[in-house]
Amino acid sequence: GESVGLHLPTLSVQEGDNSIINCAYSNSASDYFIWYKQESGKGPQFIIDIRSNMDKRQGQRVTVLLNKTVKHLSLQIAATQPGDSAVYFCAENTGGFKTIFGAGTRLFVKA
Amino acid sequence: DSGVTQTPKHLITATGQRVTLRCSPRSGDLSVYWYQQSLDQGLQFLIQYYNGEERAKGNILERFSAQQFPDLHSELNLSSLELGDSALYFCASSVVGQGTTEAFFGQGTRLTVV
Image 1 (cartoon, rainbow over the protein chains, first blue to last red):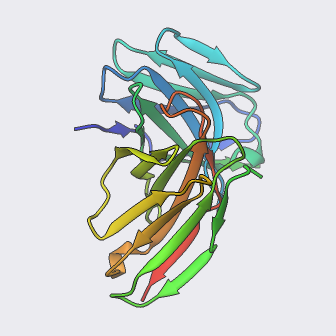
Image 2 (image 1 turned 90 degrees about the vertical axis):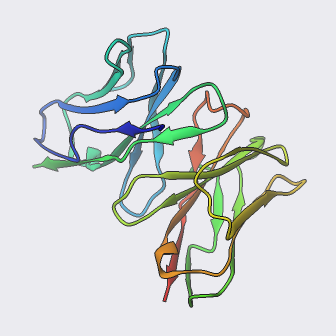
């Protein structure tokens, strides 16, 4: 069935280090991927997206990498800050109207 | 502030009851999505409307229903509530019908069934 999962449910990093959050997706027909950040008590917030015709996309301090061969997605956060502490979700879409979210990874940033 | 408004923020009700959650999308957004998030769980897609019409359905229970009105606001109706329905319910909106652009989420409605 459809599923988007994450390799690591929790990740703890030192402030200033880089963070890498991984995600595996199962639908090879998925052509659009999004990363969302959810802080405690808030709704998910868009971070960055990537379409299947790209391998890499960079934003401000964040980079998303897409490996279609192994159906793997990753989010890299440079110079992680305490404000980056949150749950991060990857999501996939096959061009239809339904977006499937992964289970989420909780990122802890140690000061 | 995402521009998506959900009411109420908190709701406590008894088993067997029925509740209605309301969502006002961002101005100009035609699509509304409903998601359920149980404690420390991911987001489960329930249903999506585009310009008043149902466009996609996820794992939505038969006890749950939704609609989108001409002014584009949406309501999610939950009936015959069970303890397991306790969760955060999020509404999101986006400009286009297909999920190829980012969706903006509301702050959620926390439903507690006792």
